[in-house]
Length: 165
Image (cartoon, rainbow, N blue to C red; front, side):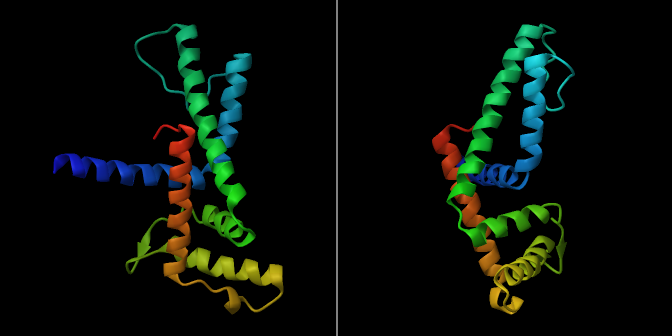
């Protein structure tokens, strides 16, 4: 039974990891290029590299850094692959979901990001198609389903592309 619980916990953590990569793609892409410049030029210390307390050896630190960069690159490519298979409405949804990424609190049992995405998606689609926004109003269940499907797709593609969770 413990093994089953461990597997279910790992799957849940993998889902969270894939969701974070989808949400924070732009930030992580900027950091990736900053870190890449550090490795190439040795100008300044990067912000996100793993530091080991065991060695001050620059060569070893660069090897560790290159491994981290390789994993980051795999994740960035995975997110780009997910984006490439989304239709226009779902791309708009993802962009708005990214806007709402910091709205993670709950009010009366409802996550705030869902209401934000619901309203903004209807507004954005209304602007694009020049029709009343109520034509594009999504239920909370639809929003949740769209998001879970995107994350599940990202997780599956991440497994296939060799991303580390």
